Length: 101
Image (cartoon, rainbow, N blue to C red):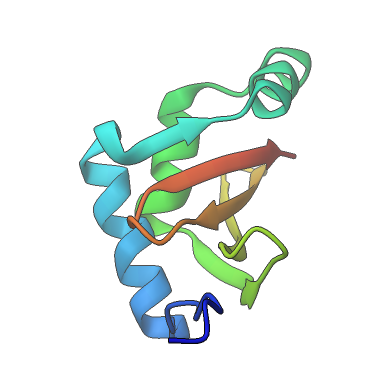
């Protein structure tokens, strides 16, 4: 064994399925402090974030980041209210909300 960490593979379809599932099982969603600050600043609710995860489109990713997580961006527009969520999916299939625009 070489001791080298091998990242898990994640297709776009599988990433989207994991994000949708996490939107239903909110116990798998982690909010960073930065995301919480942006939610307050931009008056974005958790309900809006869950709607974005549940029925938004994946506009970027998944791309492997330096932490071994898969970075993605989800977007959803409802009544001219655009929500963009930058997130990461970790090896345990948790969805980490990194930022909200």
